[in-house]
Length: 194
Image 1: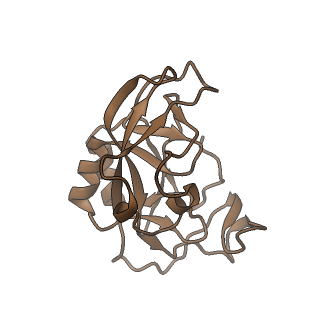
Image 2: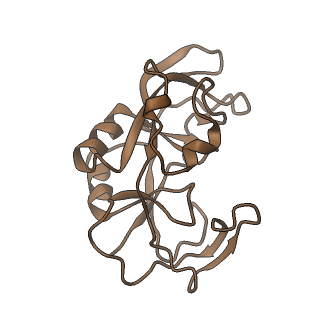
């Protein structure tokens, strides 16, 4: 089975801080539900002051936080296709002057995870802090015997800051003409976004 990495690195607005008043930042990187403790009215995230020229707002918002911030259009596609794989936590986006630019964005908290990486065949460096997590990829190899059933959108085990999708999710997001995203083949990935 083939999977792709969902890549939201783009030239649009960049977010560099977790929203205040919600779960601690590291908790967004673990496959667990957070909606029950997330404020019902949502939280606010601001464009990075370090990149004042990056103002364009895409459906997928670039972030250095290893979380996905997405528009309501993305939420609709994912919830229709694979509703159990992610939850959507509302955020209001503000620009560099703290003016509201959008109220219909979400942290796409990916709940599902899958064991798809073949660590023996991959060329990777494991983290010194999180021993079961990959810190650097030179060449990623996926397992050859991945069952076809299972989550369609997920965090790959050992690479928790990333999101992979199956061909049906990739096709749906592409057909919807969502902006700010590209897909990289996961098998053979060299750790770069270009």
